[in-house]
Length: 104
Image 1 (cartoon, rainbow, N blue to C red):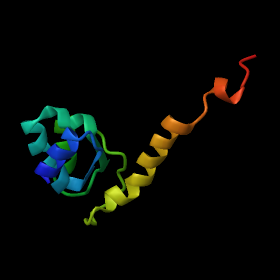
Image 2 (cartoon, rainbow, N blue to C red):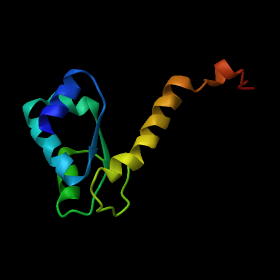
Image 3 (tube, one colour):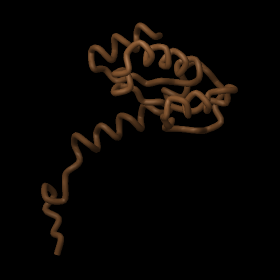
């Protein structure tokens, strides 16, 4: 996981960090190369003991906090549509000016 995160960062690819184990791997990647933070999105805060402490230590917030303790990337699966929607809003949503909305 650490190597994949470092390579994703090097290639400027989004890194969806899911749960405690992935967050621990992220911490290792971050200690090796702090620029990995520019590509990371933390999907959810799991109920694993210590996960919130790890997120606090990293100074990050997770997109979701749903009392999940399921594993298998369930936090990423739930967060991905939010990330995709955010990207669409940024890239495709018209501004008031583009949409012809008057400020009068």
